[in-house]
Structures are given as structure tokens and as C-alpha cells.
Image 1 (cartoon, rainbow, N blue to C red):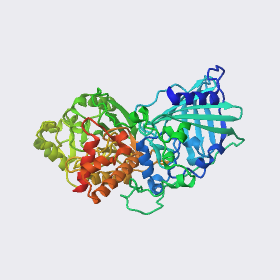
Image 2: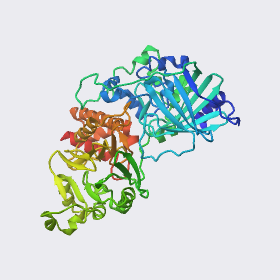
Image 3: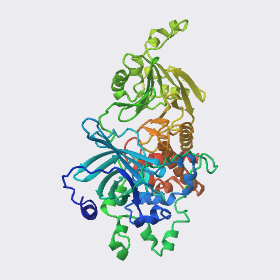
Length: 590
């Protein structure tokens, strides 16, 4: 660490942690610890005021997102039971219980369980040296944590966090945030220091310190939460404020007689010099973090798999995802990936399924990165064809898997003159209705059509017993949605709301029904809600611009997606931020 932040952290850690070079035995952190919050009482009990971003190293993108936030969003059913994430949980008012689990023979520490009473935040800190999961694995509110001892100090590294927040007045953290913590015990006092890094919304790491005191309590009460509709509203509505329309932003500054500029946050507002000179130009670090990102599309493909739940597996190709259902009846494959990875995908399917035959392929849409492997995977399969139909279909049809798709997908694939998808990769069985049902491997499999989604002819596949949805490109979490052909922004939102209507979280808006996106990491309802909320807010901003007769160029100049651009945008590659803004604007205009 260098510069202003490095000096501040060095000072803080010396004061808080003492000498980490102490090589004495690990200390026992077990017990129930009560938070010491008198220092931050106003933020932690009544809660931070709207527009209070003082001292936080936020980007301009996060400032816009915070100013757009409306507390009414917390009345939505899918938001009511969200717990504090681990980046904020120790900042709350709930007691924290730490429990150690030891290996019974060697008595080596395997993990620490952390349980904070408020919203029943449960977290595992693994101490056995295990690696963190791959980046395409599911994220959780508490993340995946591993710990190590540096003398008498417990150091914890946390990744795989869901999108959360750093201050509960609309200041968010992205799902690319990571956290380093240090726990230091001195008698009955436990000091906790966290360093949060977020390349999307922070210009530099955010350092916080919290205190706890050991109690004589022996138990923590449960904290059940059942989602409920608190306010009846149209399902297409997500509460938020349009840019420049939030009437409450100036109240905090006025109430405390502060310059409005000082309350808007930024790394410089934490410095004494700011009080004398006012806001300085953004630092080079801030400018670098706020700059749009160009993603690496040329990385060599790596095909890996993970059992989601039930009989469904997710295969990541490094670009598009493939879903595979395996059981006694054989194998059903949802999308086959690009032609370049077809053999690798097939090898992974055979590794997972053994000698079980591939019976069915379902194509969610017509893009070559999802159907390019059709021919290779289908030829490795076998259909059950008998009776009068056998001589009509011929041996070739029997010696290949059937390929299901919506008829609009078939029309698009067969009408593609570019040669991107050969005729032996076209669907063999199509449907034109809103759904088509199969019963395979002991469970109902529903093919659900969403008209005018990202392309037209989109299908999501719902494995009802396994409780997994393969969403295709109706839901992705890598970029802004791709909208082409008959697709539209409102059609995408209809598809996302349909997914949310099917998914049921297990507990605290986490787990339960899992969603395999067309691109990106494994997700659950909360992840889809985050993406749906983002698109709804952007849709409303564009519609407001259209009502004011703003042109496409004016919308681009206004930067109406800049609070999400660093996370989902791209300045190069096949789908850029500019392409998304153009497609979304035109789909709403027509």
C-alpha cells in the first residue's frame, strides 16, 4: 500500500492490531460478543440519513446510484428478507457468536462459524487451507471466507459476495467486491478491522473498525423472516428517483449546516485539507476506477462443470454456459456452446454421464455461441425412434439426439446466410406455443417461451424437481443484455420478471431455486432481482427522456447508464455499452 491510504492503514493497524509478528499460539475467539457502537451510534441504530456520503471513497457512478435510491424498494417482496452482507454485518447492532470446529484426531482448527443475531447472518471462515471457488460459482450474502493466523491476529479473506451495500442509504457494493478482515482479541475486547475493495464503486479501499465485548450470554435467539407483499404495485415497477429528481438529498447538509458538496462523498472528503479547500479534482486513482472497462474476449476456453442441485449440472465454457440434466433416462442438454468448444463440452458431458446416452438438446435461442456445438453433441447422442416412424425418420435421425427449439429460433437459424450454423445443427423438433413440456429423468421439464426478449424465440428451461432454471440469454450477469432482432428492453424485463415469478429462495433471499445464466456465474433469485432492478431503472430513465423528446445522442450524452457501466459495460467486443443504449432506446421508441 502506498500514498495517503497506505499511511492511514499502517497507522490504524499498528494501533488496532499490535505487533502481528507475535509468534505465540493462536488465540481463542469463541464466545458471544456484544457490539460496542457508541462511536458510530447514529449510523448503526437510527441509520444513516439520505444523502450522507461523508468520508466514503465512492465513484461518481455510485453517487448517482445512491441519489437514485428510494427506501420504498425495501417494501418489495423480493427485498424484504435480505440480511446484512458480511461487508456490513459487523457494523450492525446484533450480538456475534464465534464457534470453533476442530478436526477430532489432530485437533487442528478447521473453521470458525460466525453468527450475528440481526437477520441471522451465518458465515463460515475456513481455516484448513482450502482454495476459493472459481469465479463462475454462486455468490452469497456472507461470501466465501478463508482465514489464517498472523501471530495473534486472525486474517480473513472474503470473495464471492452478492451485490450488497457499504451504507444502508443507497450506497451499494458490486458483486466484484472483496474484503480483508483482521480480528484481534485483548482480554474481553475484540477489535475487528475490515478493508473493502470494489473496482466498480470505490476509488480506493474502504477501512472500518468495529469493537465487541465478550458477554456471559450462552445462546442467540433465531431470527425467522417470511417475505411478504407490503405495498401492492404493478410488478413492472421498481421504486427509485430519476436523476436530479430526488427531493431529499439536501436535507442532511441543511440539518447539520454542512456544504452540500462535502456530503456527496469521495476519498477527498475524509481529509482535513478538504475542510479548508473544498473538493479537489478527482485523483488519478479515481479516474482510473471510473473509466469504462474493456473485457478480454480472447482468453483460451476452459471447460469446467459444477453440480447445481438435483440432477442438473452447469458447464462453464468460459463464455456461454451449458446446462445438463443426467439420470436413468439419459442426458438432456440445454445449449451446446460455440463450435470451438464443442468437443470439450462433449468430453465433459461424457465424464459426468458415463455411458448414458444424450437424448435431447434444447436451444434457448439462435446465437452461434449457444448452438454452434449442436452438430457435434447431437451426433454423439441417440434418439428412441421405432414403429411406423422409424423408416420415415431413417437411421441418421435415430443415431442422433433430438434438438428442440421454438419455431422462431428454427427460422432464424435456417435463414442465416452467413454459414455460422450448419444445417445439421438446426432444430429437429419445434413448437410455437408459450410452452412445451417433457418428462425426463423423473422430473417435469418445461420449455417456456418469452416473446421479444433478447432476440425473439427465446426459451428458458425449468427443471421442476431439481428446482433449476436454464435461462439462456434472457438472464446474463456479465454485460448489459444483448437486444437484437425482435428483442426489446421491455421484453427482457418481462422475461426476468417471469424468472422471478418462478424462483423461490430457501432462506433470507438466498439459495432455493438456482438460475443458470446464458453467460456468467451461477445465480439465484436475489441475483436476478439485482439485474431486473437495474434494467427497470434504466428503462424508466430512457422513457422519461423519450417523453421529453430527447434524441438518442442526447441520451448517450446524459450518461443515463453510468452508475452501472463499470459493472456491465464494455468499450469493445461484440456488445458495447453504446450498442446496448442504442438498442434499448430504439426498442422503447418504437
